Length: 244
Image (tube, rainbow, N blue to C red; front, side):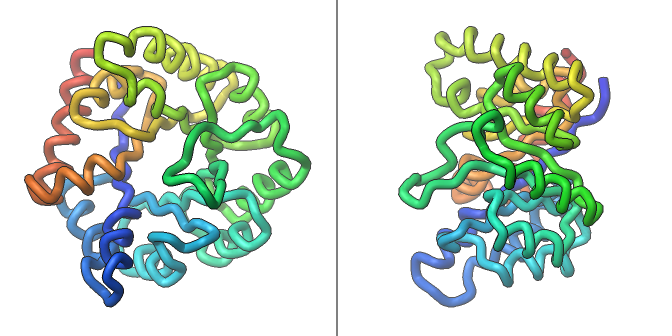
């Protein structure tokens, strides 16, 4: 089975910093610690309202941390321009609503309008790997492929939020979505809401080559320390890949 990347989302280190103001805790230092502990990349979501990650955070992580930077962003003129200037390794286009606490579901590629396709082309033209955050729905995945995306990220939120005994149907949909991504010629990533208990079955899917984990990982770091949580996540992935 191919290796799986673990991308650590440090958004909520910035959330904690912003709650009081000042410079601490520093998301750039968190990114360094995560990479030092074995993370394969760093994910940040630069939101329109800058509620957690700020422009300077993205610039510093991109220039100071030797890792694969994945910039989550809405498909807006402002964000496309920022991405094309900074040129992270990857961009994941996500839906964004100002009133939401966190991303609530996948982007509706089929109803997104013409700007999305243009954004994908501009980002790819800047040498950025473009993924689109979608539900595990074959029509959405095929639509992402038609737009020229190189990857999709499956929304795992409904699966992760379900009671353990009720996760079966959600997991089957994710498996079908991963298979649809492979059939469409897309790389398959996954993320949202994953923790120690829910990560394993997703990591066991051979099509999934990257998972992005943030809220649980940063929250659990209060108790275990960030390097310890990253290392434990890596063990979960390794065991699932070996068993799968």
